[in-house]
Image 1 (cartoon, rainbow, N blue to C red):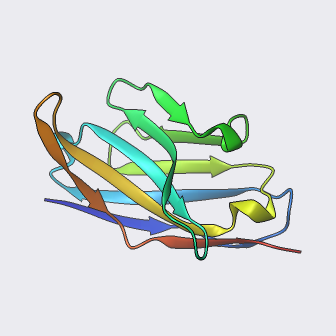
Image 2 (spheres, rainbow, N blue to C red):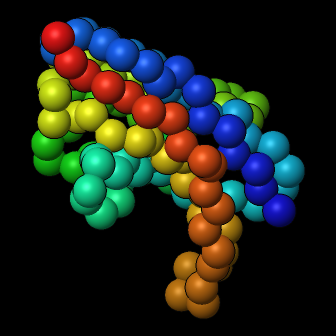
Length: 120
């Protein structure tokens, strides 16, 4: 089992910055990949950024150059550094962990989310 708890959300002005954190506990080293998703009001959840155990990262086009995903060396914290935030970034942000075997299958774990509100 994996437990995920997000923090760091809040109200920020357009053009501002924010860093989200996700505290990871449980079977940490069973995790193969982690990601941040967001869900704007009334819209479906979308992946924003992902990072593999090997350190490879992928980003949604709309956040490339503005957001950075990372994990600490102990692998118990996932971060999302967000710069030049825009109103369209307003959403609930969710921490995600995937536990599985490539080519076989796996299980997704989710935090409860943290709200980011970009508004003047």
